[in-house]
Structure formats: structure tokens, C-alpha cells
Image (cartoon, rainbow, N blue to C red; front, top):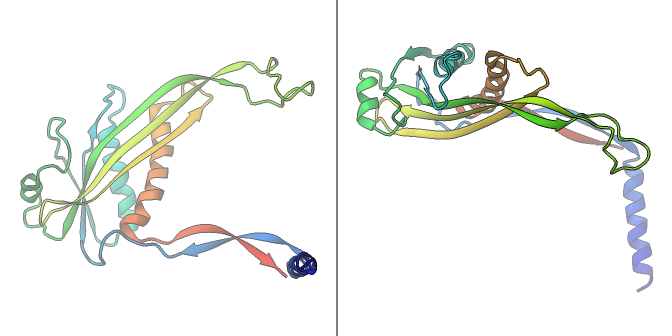
Length: 218
């Protein structure tokens, strides 16, 4: 029985010899999987999103509507249109009769609707510098700095114009820290909305994604 561990070690060493060259990271295009059957809709109607944290300086609901419509126009082969359906802060996609009436005559359309919030908070953080050589837990030489954290939250629903029912719901939350405390909401919104688009469009269209893999070389 003593020979068994030696035999197992020999197998491991032989396998290591087969892959003696270092692994190489590669990017692979993976097919996307849509949450919707092919050909389900030929038109996307983007509504004005309800703003959960309204600001007098930045109309988030309108900005998100315009952003999504513009980006969809670049990716979707069908029709992309706007429709203002503000309902005095009522929850989105909770009244099928409302959506059926709004989409009358456009049965092969879907609504993109929902609510959003953009919040900026100033926080204290340790300045990112090398730790002193006197010890790994000595942070006396690192001072506190202020950062501005912007958080964009979006509750998004895809609603059928034919039935008025919500076909799909998803919640996004993206955040980003900025050392520049005066970074405007418009700048943060542009960055964070791009992240949400990158996550949502593959679900909507089944678009391919780029993923990283490790290639073992002999």
C-alpha cells in the first residue's frame, strides 16, 4: 500500500509536465440568452421613469428615458419610441388595464417602465497609500480623505402592450466613488447608466457577451 501515494505523486508530476507552460488568459464570445421568445415584440416604448429621489437640479426620470431610448435605437432593429406616462408617483406595471389602454393598437410592443433613484453621499475613507514598513497594522501615517459616492438604483419592468402584464422585472444597483466632491450628478449618471445598459441589454436581446477564460498550454 505504501506504493500508492508514490504512484499518485507520479501522476500529478506527469500532468504538471504536460502543462509546463504558464496559462494564458483569453477572451471568449459567449452566446447570449434572452428572457423573451424570438419575435415577441417589434416595438419598444420607453416611458418616463418615476424618480424616487427627486432633485431640482437633475431630472433623473427623463434622463434615464432619453438614455435608454438612444441606446436601444443603436441596438434594436425594430421601432423605439417615447411615451410620457407619469402617474403621480404610483407604482409602475401594477395596472394591466392602464397599460393595455396606453398600448392600444400596438399589440406587438412592450413598455420599458419603472422607477429610479440617484443618491450622492460624502464619506470618509482611508487614503490609499503604501503601508509603512514598521508594521502591517500601523495606519498612523494614512490620513482620512473625503469621497463622494454616487448610487444609481433602477427598478425596471418590461410590460406587454397586448396584455398589460409585466413580462419581466429586474432591479439594478450600481455605485461609484469619486475623489472630486464636486463631480456633478450628470457625470455619475452617465457612468452608472452605462453599467446598467451592459447588464440589461443581453437579457433583453440575447446579445453575446465577452467572458475571460484561462487557456492551459502544453
